[in-house]
Length: 222
Ligand code: C5P
Image (tube, rainbow, N blue to C red; front, side, top):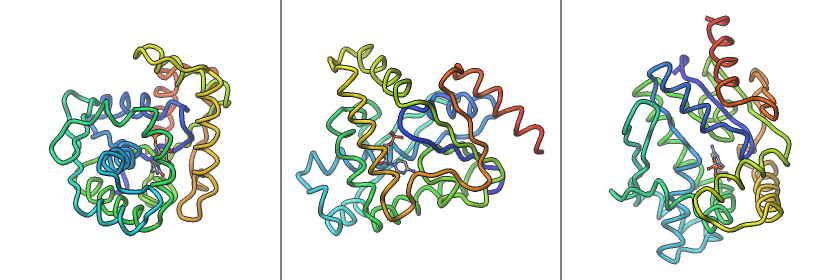
């Protein structure tokens, strides 16, 4: 599991774009762990399971099949109980509730088991909030991407506008700020860089520049 690449950071720091590019360049599998928490949240909302009920969410997680299917190098679709939910899990409603679901310790245990199983089977680029600190602490390559709140909100807003959603930049900024607060303050595996992570501020960098920087760092350390 040592060759795996862990990429952590707050919402909108550019993790998924960079992780996808890295997976493609290296021939690794890309695992978006946020998508796993999102898929569970999506199912809970659909089935009327309360996001405040830890026991019910654990039960739901144990009775849910989550799969990643590689559709092209670096491009992965997410399936929940056999249904392609790749787009559905990006909805603003899921975004509003996911950090509440992800704060439950026993829900996290279920997700981390799955994440470690996936990483044991193939070399992975895994992105999330606790990959370097908790899920794959033995990974040789750990990166923590950050960017200013303004820049992160602007990126998310542009993505949503491009998909035809109507939100103000202020609304997106508030949602991201609230999610970061919950993710950083939760008791179990909060958002923070691993002591041995390379921290990269992506505010003034393109995703390609970040990917090149990471590849150079990896080559230097090998
Ligand atoms: O990466 P993304 O923004 O899609 O993640 C959605 C949410 O899932 C995060 O805000 C966080 O609450 C949760 N998450 C987590 N641990 C991870 C990945 C995501 O708690 N490893």
